[in-house]
Image (cartoon, rainbow, N blue to C red; front, side, top):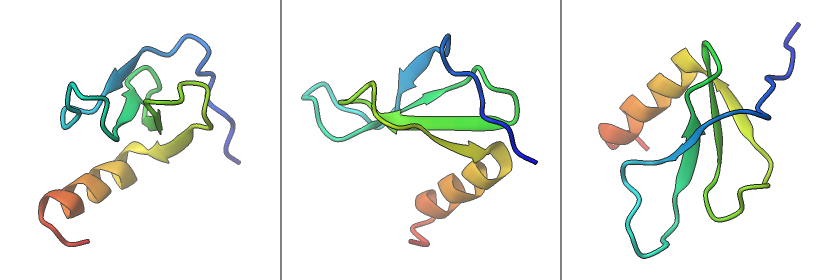
Length: 68
């Protein structure tokens, strides 16, 4: 059974690939153990996608290797 992460006090940070021009970017929170919450940085009250850390790392590796 999976339970929802409490993100009410989460500290969000913008992706290191964000630019200063307000371009498209995401924010992640590092406060949830073994989870990676992700949201749209332009709409801070947007829905949050929550990934298992291992799955998120696999996704990032795929992006960096241009597998997608």
